[in-house]
Length: 333
Image (cartoon, rainbow, N blue to C red; front, side, top):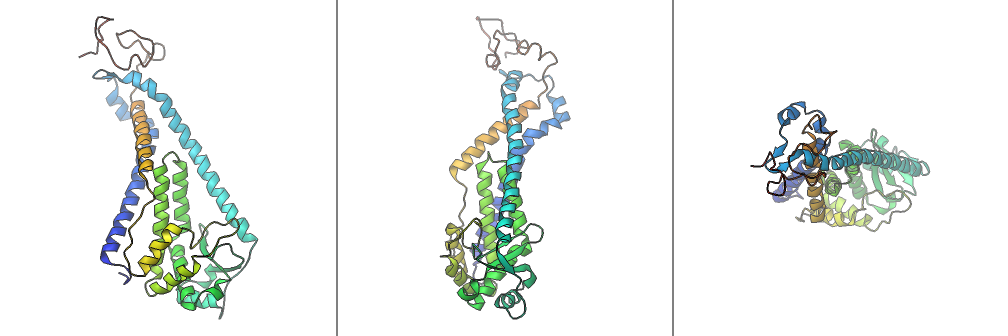
């Protein structure tokens, strides 16, 4: 365990990361399986065949009422897939377009960036030194991630700070964070109607920075903290909104951890996003469960004739009614 982290802090952060993974997995399972699961659940359909009422509740009427909701969620998934694909493709082209316009070089020999990279355990061939880079340092690339650093850092940071910075970015390369986080954003945008998933993805992105800090700070926590402070006032310019000091809310936590303090583990998830997720999952779950119930063969021709009480609308048939107003419902009691 690194000296800049206490056992209590490590335990809290690991518990938070496990919660994030469980939350993301649960949201994916609970949101997608009801939409498509009934298409493959032949055994469940057989078990539900003939069970048209649950007490006074008419399952057939409920089926008809929730079918448009189920179709709507199918449409949301399709729209979400198109939206996520568009976002990821345009983001990749935007980054590439910006980088192609900048003058980049690979550090070699006795160049300060090459020395710092070797000292940090990073292959200098993975590093690109860029004049006029909008952000001080970041890692980009899905299959072959590279580290991009601003040439101005040669004069702004001390050698130990530059080494710590490259060690941080090298951790992103080793963990393939650009690909992992891009895939997670793709999932969050696909299920855009679950805002809690997008906020969990933001938490995962924060934890990727924290883990990269921990790997870089094994021997140099104060040097990395000093680099963060030096870069805190860096103002990104142009189209490239990624980088080392972008999340101001996260910067305080990172610096305090590196200084040996125990800041709280914050989350982007809000009560409103959780409430929205619960409502959406309740709707998709109920509509998916009802769709697994097979309709009677004559339902298309006579959608409301299965009950013995009057009424032509599905809503009127949602609950069987027995009394003097009409025939006794054959399912009552």
